[in-house]
Length: 394
Image (cartoon, rainbow, N blue to C red; front, side, top):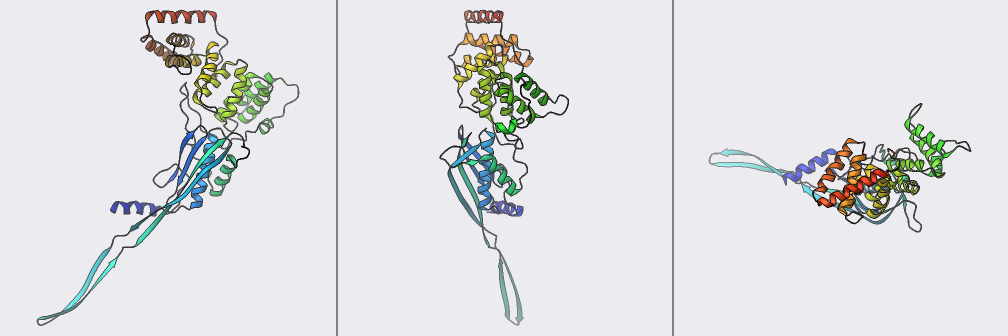
């Protein structure tokens, strides 16, 4: 009982509704991912939080998750709003006072007992839970919310200027990197709005546009302007320039100069990869490996990563080696795995990457016969002597 009173006292002393925050002692939001584009989102308020506020903040978290995973719209397929109530009573204290008068052998007097406390208080805490399905484009025949509109509307209603940075949790990519935090103040990502950021003369070549994008991105001659760079890359990418397509994909993947959108990143990576661009093949393979913007598919990942590995991408070579070793998307083949580790170690200009490949190769060699190791070495030597395509640095 004493513990309950202490907890209630702490809550009551705060005297304010639950803020928009990840769930903690005073409430907040939480979520569970059920599928690639399906989430359950719950917001739990404290005793000062109205049901309207809890519902709004649950919807706001839905919008955040939708945008941070590269989607633009979401539909609520299930909603549950409820209030949990608890009561407590303050401790009771009794005090007795009195007076007495003695007359010989007789005592006369009065007594009064006063009891305080014992008040009963009720605390009601609202909760709102939504199950949502996210879409890249607005679905037909199904009511859906525009995630960006909901985010703008609710943050303006409650005066929220900065959203939580923990809006997305990404699995580590094969090369150990992690995605950046979504940029909520990034400009709109509609193609026509991106294109309109620059005025381009007719007749300018895609290569020239790509170079203008690189200069804008790097800030040559002034400050960096990622939004302007994205416009140049987009026009060049639409004209079929593979390097522009790949670079535009990286902007959409990272949310640089445009609103982060994994599906669009995959689209541009695929166009570059289809033209044999080594970085486009590596990036597309990595997206399939991680399941970002597409359904996770190790077989498809192996296809594109092998393409990049065959052209000399040492990162792709290392990942392909692990895939052959562990039968991930390809049949297990220790000889092929050893060969790719060997090539990655020999061609890598990055000391850390080289050491990682060497270690993987040596660990694998201990699980192989001497004949298998010799065969793998011959394959690596043959492939190295025939050469690889030009290796670009991302």
